[in-house]
Length: 111
Image (cartoon, rainbow, N blue to C red; front, side, top):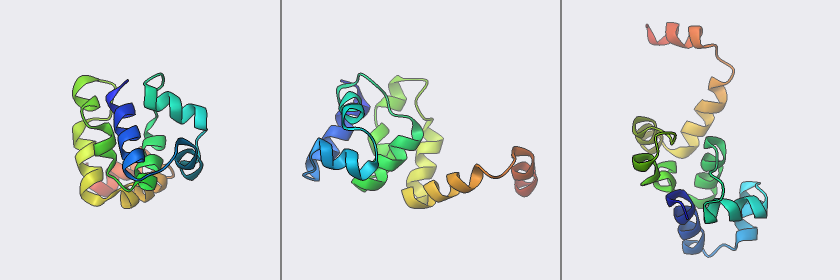
């Protein structure tokens, strides 16, 4: 079982949710969620954000230990920023960012 899978399962059990309840609330398939928990699959960032919202935990806590062991995991700076601004704000910003071209974003920041 991966660290992410262990964390998802632990948070789910802490909140007294069944696999089916969490899958329904996060809008993922029950079998897919089961694969995440057993480590057969790794959720993408969007799914991690959904799970963190439903479980009411920072995404960084779901990713804890995984980012230290896996270069492909979300980087620590991004994890820290998500935790700092909050999951809901980060999710809203990321949705808005889809609509902004990189060049325009860099102009806003002054790069």
